[in-house]
Length: 326
Image (cartoon, rainbow, N blue to C red; front, side, top):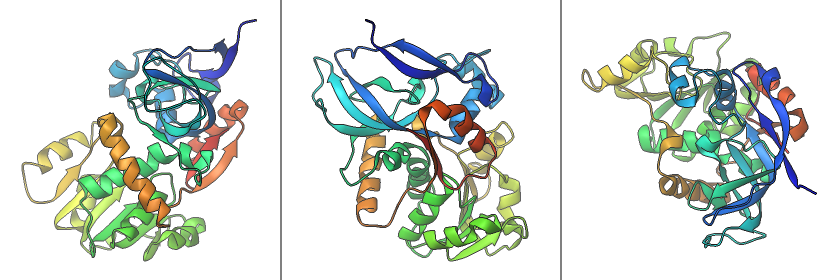
């Protein structure tokens, strides 16, 4: 009898309903790969954008008419159940977490991943659900605030979208770095964001945080809701506007700000950093978590069979933290 695995296919770009469950032959690890039984995987805004083929200028890389890979999901946590002949970093029975990257396919029951990719031992104290989201918003926000924004103690940091999968770790990370943190969110999330470490919370439905003009050292636009021109008046003399959402409209500001003036618009694709660099960042993140300064926020956990519903919920734009399927 053929052994199969459950996965989710994206036959063409579109809404959550295009996601199609499929039964595929169980993969066999190549010499440098490990086979994982996936215990939990994330459902992210980036996954939804890939499913829709957005932004349009990314389609030459993703696939012009349909996703080139065609499988759903990037971030996961699970158990090693088989290893290739040349694998040295992991053994059968190890609990690990990481990301499938551009291979995709994390929203599945099993997956083969390269041992030299973004794959890490999972601490015993860390649940699979929490581990599955570390390579999305947590890793991105760590990279943006620590490396790109170079946040230091006493910096005034504004986080646009403080309740989401990037914003909720960003508030904790900036507070851990000693910054004075202001964050925006809806009124219903204000108390949660305050508990994460924000010194001030602004209800974006009532106030425009960029009109306050307290001269922020860093503005971290987690959702791409602003623009560099809108943020610029609220930045200090050498302030940094950070945004992980790249659009054609944002690109000229990123390029020009490096040539004119002291204020900077900064973008980087965290997931395209070298795997060894990302693993080093994840080690730093695990240390901060162990010290009790950072905890992933999980909004909802769905069965893997309810992936369409999970994508639909993420698409509402009202999730608090992260969404996971198990």
